[in-house]
Image 1 (spheres, rainbow, N blue to C red):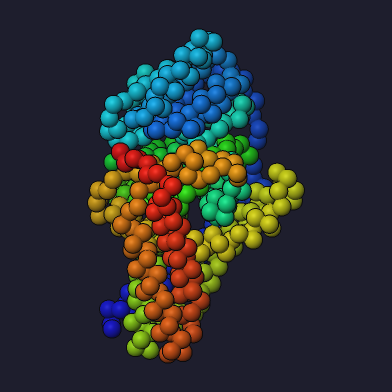
Image 2: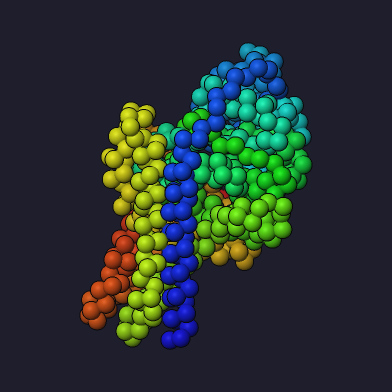
Length: 490
């Protein structure tokens, strides 16, 4: 039992530190929330390349290309690259769109690869060879930039030669589609409303988000270019550029709408990819961050930033050791660790602050507290995905390879059927792990009731609800006879 107690203590302390770190970022944001970058006019029109990486995006490719073609920018200073790795009829659709807009004077080209070496990073790197712009903007297939996006981002790069990258906020095209998309929006809003502004205003590392951002080309090249050795090439490159001395700017008041996954299977795949990539970056970059020339406080915050993905293995360890501790009435140091319980408030309070900052006081015509009512569901969903994400974090740390799964896109309206586009991924082994853990948690709850271990019930009930929710939705989507499977592994 000594080993079990040690695992319990380490897991509780790590999760509490993660919660306190979230609270610290929120307080830090609150101190600087009125610091907004001044609006700068664009006095010249540098040449810009807009890269659009695609892989089997037949349902959104037209929307994306039309939005980029409508950007308010001189046509003789704009190049558009459709970087297509598709294995379906997306390539044919893209060819027609490229031909249509090229005939109307837009400098647009299709760059097609027959293989997916290095995935998105490889596609972006290939496009950079023929790019003519001194600045390179990137939009994923599920995003729709507003017409004035370039006019509102380029002035900062033009005015600040040491600025390597500008990231803008992700809007949500379909957050009202279901409770699942709303929960995702609440979690993403934490990063774009609280974390990015707090880090940017205080000189800390700000991660790029892979889309809705624009790079200085010399910044990409001087930092070593796009690398495909992690699943989050954006996080990797942005940290490498800041280690090398480039600055990153985040503009909260400039946004581009993005589409959220509407299927649990797609959301699971996306979360797995993001968490595994973050763990890979932790393994790859931790030493370089620590040995950089940045102040100690900046380096420590950057390491904490990269290490947040370890919360998922810690949470799973805490769940697994709870049953033996309950069974043997052997909860160690409970009273001495009670003060750490404040850490559990970190995530919900940060979510609440993010909703108020983005949608409070009449902003965007939305009532922030109505959105905040979905916070409990977002927390339950996060608990249910912890096993999926813990496996991702461990694979990333151990450099274990696994098949790449894209995130299917194409449903943005409430009345659309989820299965209409065949956007359901094949059933993975991770679903059965969730089912097994749900049963394990139910046994732990019954044991806690029998042994009067009421201290464990709130924690276990949240886990049970989350694991059951994720398991049921995943099984329903992937086993339904009317839901065709998408061949999306690359």
